[in-house]
Image 1: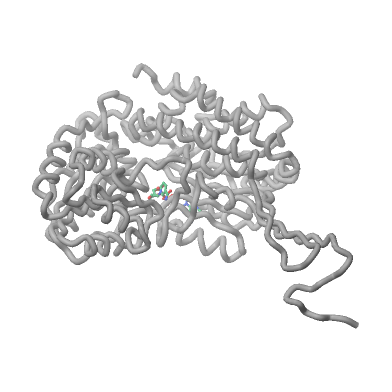
Image 2: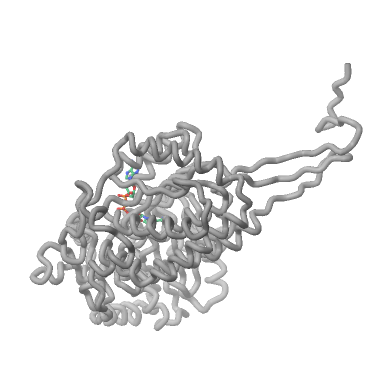
Amino acid sequence: MSMNIESVFTALGLSEAQLNAGDLAVTSPVDGKTIASVAVHNSNQVDAAIAKSRVAFEQWKTVPAPKRGELVRVLGNKLRDHKEALGALVSMECGKIYQEGLGEVQEMIDICDLAVGLSRQLFGLTIASERPGHRMTETWHPIGPVGIISAFNFPVAVWCWNSALALVCGNSVIWKPSEKTPLTALACQKLFDAAAAEVGDIPEGLSQVIIGHADVGEQLVNDSRMPVISATGSTAMGRKVGPAVAARFGRSILELGGNNAIIVTPSADMDMAVRAILFGAVGTAGQRCTSTRRLFVHSDVYDELVPALKEAYSGIRVGDPMQQSTLVGPLIDKQAFTNMQSALDLAMVNGGEVLGGSRALQDTYPNAYYVNPAIVEMGETKQTVQEETFAPILYVYRYNDLDEAIRLHNDVPQGLSSAIFTMDMREAEKFTSAVGSDCGIANVNIGTSGAEIGGAFGGEKETGGGRESGSDAWKGYMRRATSTVNYSTDLPLAQGIEFNL
Ligand code: NAD
């Protein structure tokens, strides 16, 4: 890759003034250097952004949905045109490898396509009325400005999952990106502005970005002019945001932490399992909400699978995420490294056998935090690790009975993604049934990470219960109206009630 950061800034239209506008230092996890200092929005500016968003909503909700889809279609094309530059900026700002940066932009393009199709549907229901000469329908209407709070590890896709749907649904949006990744957000805003200019007659402030730390997000969360808050991040964040939105009777879509696992049964295709576990556990340096964190291996295949996995780990190339040969880039920051080391120390205290986990490339990048991904063999236990550590640690457990493995699998506070590797139909069906995985995503012979946008994405329990992306997730961005029309000359009351003078 010959792209340097200046050429990426230029390709995305980020100006010198914007990159030196304030006090929020943006540090690249690649080498720990400051690459920009952007301006943070103060409380008055956030307030003004919300007011503007409400005005934009009043106009946008009157535009026919297929016309709203046209804006999202053009946005998708802007993303296609800038895929390489935006993918590179994702890589430079959050540290994921360039291939995954490109994948993230592709996901944005895909959700735009989905949203464009959806803009010609947004269908309701016709429901049988119990009264003669009556028709009952259910219709979906725009709901209002949608607040989007996003995490550092999917710095751009999360915005698009939410905004592509919210926009075709007739809403305005305000995005508060992670304070660790504001540049990709500013770049997306440029692409949105270009799309809006090309389409023409788009309300000002239809999509806005506000930059800042948690307090800026809190202001959105607490403002009743924002009927929907979609918040992606840690469970600790969701624990604050969920109750605050509920307290004002707003709606929240929470996409929080995971503690995802794969079960490998005796009949599994071992080559496929190893590849899926490897990508799930070390991809994005273990910094995906859907990263594979726990592995349950049947005793019959343990001594085949685990050595094969260790062999695969020995070939992982850790390094500069922009280098084509790199599979694992850096952790986001020093805190993430410290958290990983604490988790490994605790695993050892609990009898785990740790392979890997040390800091890498310290001489080349003294201010960045690269690690060798860790495998921790925990043996056969009655309880598995309960916390999400956002780093490449794979806890491996031995099991003998599938029901016990499923019990252990589910016995954690989180419920995002899960998978089983098996060729046995009964095992596969059980895992995806009501007595199987309790997660929002339950896969067979596919790993835990890398969901397609066509399905609803999200998880249960402390993962927050929200759903985004495909299926009927769009309903989260609309309000529902049940309408009964009486075309008869009588006024029969429901439930047969007589109420005559
Ligand atoms: P984080 O919780 O530290 O921050 C996420 C966002 O929330 C940031 O924009 C932050 O400024 C904001 N925020 C924090 N406290 C807030 C508050 N009280 N009010 C309003 N906004 C607040 O998370 P992170 O470290 O950026 O991301 C990693 C976490 O995100 C992991 O737990 C990961 O599993 C999770 N995640 C979940 C999904 C999902 O879809 N389920 C996707 C990506 C990441």
